[in-house]
Picture 1 (cartoon, rainbow, N blue to C red):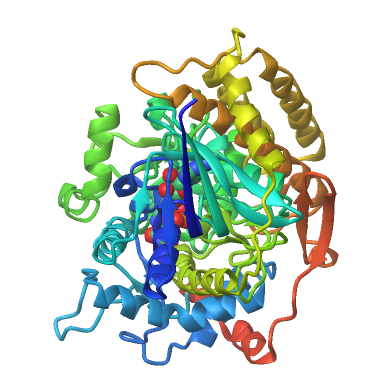
Picture 2: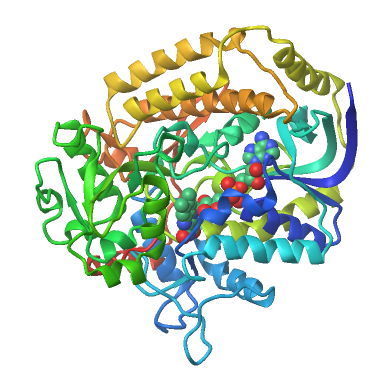
Length: 576
Ligand code: FAD
């Protein structure tokens, strides 16, 4: 067996925005760093982010402040965000923007040169900076340029299958090269997990291909870290339903912002029943719930969706204001949206839960292990404000980079365990030796089906229990798994590990959703339709300890005051 052994001070797993920002910080601090990712760095999930990134710069609305940004974020989180994390993010977000600007990020600007800022839903002021509707792509490019200028080593063909831990202290990670299958053993003092979320375990998802398969949950949980808020998943109201390999692809909220109308199969403009004042411009969680209710009560289309109708809008408006939607629908479905409505359904969009982290440095329960970006938790609670995830990954990328640098410098001895290394190596040997007949793709499909049916926008005790029992049945198929690397590479092995990540992520989500017996933000329980003030807690899940409810830290009075002043009327300016 061909095995590469690499040593570095800090290993960053993930080459999306979060991982790159952390790696840049480490390099700037003169620390030895290596960043690895399982798919091409130019095409990480971050590139999909469209609408923008938030920071209280006050370029358009000088009255804005980081405290108001924090107040909006905590309010919209239905009080489940950690106020300490939110405050650190909002206070430092302007610095994150200035750094990006210095590194050449082409932000949209006003005629006088100020960075433009626009409204996003539920923000009190215009505070979302953007680069057309390619903000994520431009951020990724900017960070990659900066990383290249600093000579940050990046290997974007390495799949990490296990974190290496001895006596609750991290000492590296194990994996393989997806192209040639060679094994990779990486020794590191500290490891930063920037491996994204778990939204690919639903059938309808804005996530693409083989990302967001739940690797974060598996890697962290097997290492001994805990997962917080697994049940809190943001469903975007509008994802397309066909073709199957593009199911869930986002139709931007701008389509509703420009005047798109939602109709059920009976032709009724149903939002008038759910939010008569704001109609289609209601908040993301409410529109997603309304659509799901129409579908579950039998007023959906035969394919199980509703219709987003733009046909009454002037053709020029569609071509000029929604060019990406127009082009995508022609490409994907040969559908001319100026003539025909789009069939849509809610789509899993963002993991608000993730690895439990300390507010000050995003360290975890395992010494030397950190988590950032969509892999982490605590920023968004039960409902994420559009534009906050890019802000979080920039701010905490810098903080975590600095924390890991200082941890590595202060580490007296790296404890290693050959047992942990052997177990990681044997896991891959066993998968490759499998002579079964079951197919990874069909098992992934089974997970997506059960999560969509039982843990989608609307959940219930009965459904979640059924989901868990179906999950047991999928898990029981694992020993019969067939893994066949071929001339094209080791994708099949990667998919098998993706599947194992999805199994753990699905279990954490179903069990946490079962325990949250209330309706709050994106989590709707048909059997508990009200918010329960007693459940202002975070559900914290671990592989060995099951679930515990952890109280949310108090919100500082200066922020609470601003929360009560937030005007409802600003809600409804949509973009992402
Ligand atoms: P990712 O970009 O997902 O990167 C994860 C990295 O981990 C990748 O490099 C991957 O290869 C690697 N990885 C995963 N598992 C492994 C493994 N086992 N081994 C090795 N590497 C691994 N947010 C906003 O703030 N504003 C927006 O306008 C916005 N628009 C969005 C639009 C869409 C369509 C979508 C889908 C999301 C949007 N978001 C937006 C959310 C935002 O894009 C993401 O939350 C953010 O980019 C996540 O970045 P990340 O670095 O944490 O993870």
